[in-house]
Length: 284
Image 1 (tube, one colour):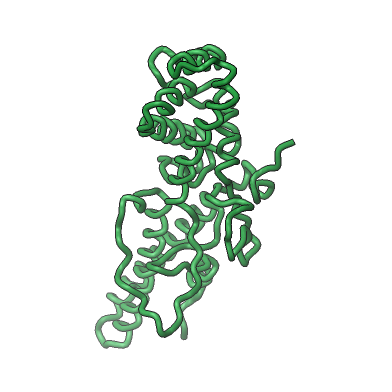
Image 2 (cartoon, one colour):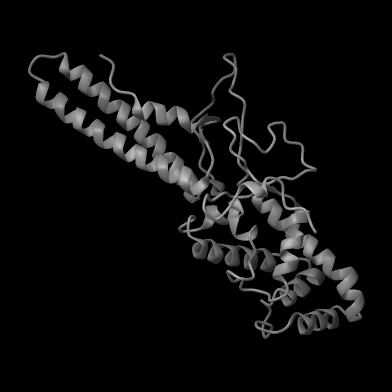
């Protein structure tokens, strides 16, 4: 029986966990377990190749029955989903990603055969794997047995490698805290890799952290000034609303992504610290 990907035994459908790039052969000084005991499953190119081989039997589009456990829960798939906590939404995201990867295979030989095998070439959808293998072998002028044993594994490896390279863009990043001597750098940049649901949610968390802090500052500052008590009360009420929204966002993030670190600029913070900040009452 083939071993499961590293950490996979700690993720189940009830407590959603997403798979990162990585594996037993990868050098990861922080390992697959965070300081708080949270497990972060990882997959290797070999894992992906195996899962794609299982998916090959029916071809695309992947269904809840054929997609397996790992592919719909890749972090790169969840990040592209409209509703990452919903299996059907992740499945749609997976199908779109796989089609894109196959279409972008510019290798004239393997690209054509891969699109036939995964049933996205014209006239192949809904056909059997046997017939698709024969068509792909004929297209490349190979005998079908040679194609199945020698060429098909190379094609699966190429697709898995491309899928893994895409997954690396979304790999959960853990950094050591910068030393006091190191500059913190400019504001976080915005790239195409940041256009994801997870990044939006993290940004909104920090938006409300600072919004809540600003309202508390305003309330305390105005309270000390005669004649501004009503304005101070307005800011206190606004602070309560910011706090409530922050709590909801933190709950959504941990429930959706199942991890305990969020990024801010070039550093990452334990989300427990943000949760404690939310629960902290105003100092006397």
